[in-house]
Image (cartoon, rainbow, N blue to C red; front, side, top):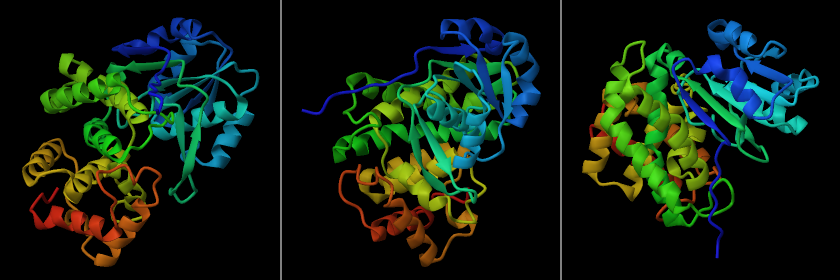
Length: 354
């Protein structure tokens, strides 16, 4: 019998002003010395506060893409660090993870946007210089600390939060695909009952509070806090301990299309989720309802709206999607023709011009 496995960060802290308790949280996590991989925007936003909390820390600048070379360069700068702290967006965070992997060190994460659910995970996605996915690297365990300052998150453009919601909204459908296809999660096990409960709660929060969170002002309210937790913590636990499916597989194809290259990860996942449902998992009513929600928070729901109409382009995306290791996590085996038809149906069915 397959083992049931759930992985999670050792400690999760969320709320306005959380950055100002970074010093005490690092001590709880085991203490320093600390090396901080930080992107330029995050340095401008919170660099001084981080330095005040961690006076002896090395602040290492993230170079802009999470490549093998970037990871190696930051790993070489870690010095005598006993903890690597990643601060910023997803690629800076993954670079911190990659550097920690190379040195065998624990990692702490402080995201400054809620655009995806990578902060809680033990994996780092590595890219080539031309921004294509090269592969995935894994830490031995999840981060020892994930610290989310929601005042910082609330100050970011709402496009990032919408992308985080789009990433998270894939999870109930991908978990269903993984369960139907018998696929393992990212720990090589089966999803636990807790994982399935987490996925359901995340979906409930996002559908109820997502639009309110998008309208929230600079001071985080209760709805905003719930949505950020759903997008980062609940969704992060869901994907690692539940498993992925077609929605995330599609991003491999989307990422190579010039028409879609400017989309954030969660925006691509929104299109991928609709594609997954259209391939046979969802009814027309379910697809229309999800597309309506995604459209209302500013996420893409159409290929035509991005100038993709040629069969050759759809086929290229479909073929690349099927190379993903979790493409088989579905209720039935899919061909490239199945995915082409699913993508085309989103435009033909009037799912939008968004």
